[in-house]
Length: 101
Image (cartoon, rainbow, N blue to C red; front, side, top):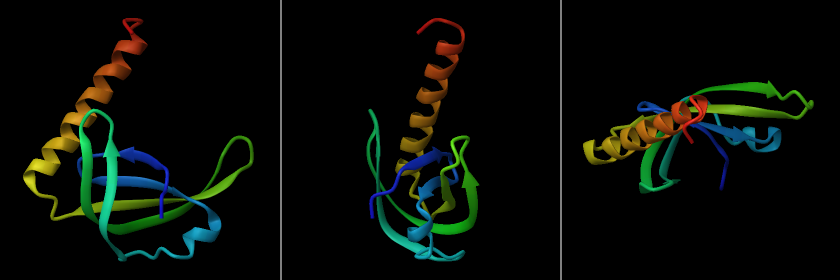
């Protein structure tokens, strides 16, 4: 499956899943060999554990399920990759808020 990535943290990711596809996910499921492209960092391959699922309704009335996943035994070099990505994104966000970008 190819799914939109909602957020990334040092501990895991949030996925946006249609209501139909949400039936494929249950708390505790292990997702093996997940591939995530982190812009300017490269391909991150990881094992994910589904930790939570909850319905979300957007302002325009669209509904989806947010699937919160935790990284499982992420090796140090891959964790470093995630941390570099987060640091860069936060730096860019702050620059935009301060009118510097």
